[in-house]
Length: 274
Image (cartoon, rainbow, N blue to C red):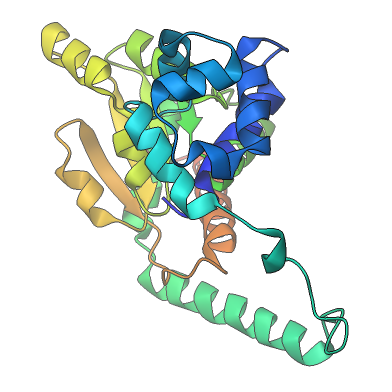
């Protein structure tokens, strides 16, 4: 989890939920990050004028196992005003000049070249076929990868294929719980860590009890996601792991999947989808 993750989760919860006790707690936490870092659950509950059980449910809604995992995530998100004050006697603003922009563009292009050279076109083609043949399909991610998931949803809709997507972790998990064996779940996560947040113990237990589960495909830089017994296969992103370029890598991968799906749709060779 990077230092901004907890902040993104709180903001997302605040933005997608109707005004409620949950959004009010999110607002309180966002305004008091430093205070909550050292609070116990009872102290936080008193601060927010709610019960400890409400705080526990709030943490789970954010995708944390318990309050202690939630509190630990705050450690990397503590900011002070001093971090943002720029010495007016030295440099008040940092201007993006042509040299900096050129370096950024070069970095993006270099990363794309690495991706294309490592591209596993067969797994992309396989995913395109699975999307085409699936009765129901969904794409999920978290923060930037959820943006990529929704972009994939929009691009596939252009081709006449409507897939599902949800923003909140809670809705995503409920969709997976309700999914049938022939349904396709695409999980987009650059690091692969979101896979393990999404597949809660409740979901795993349900899979075991039912003896079956939906087809789960992970689009990730982390090939170890394939070690999960519930993952059918991994579509490897194949780029370098650099936070400055990860978003671009995800968008390029979405474009490649879309392009392959479009080629599949236009093909007259039925064997391509068998």
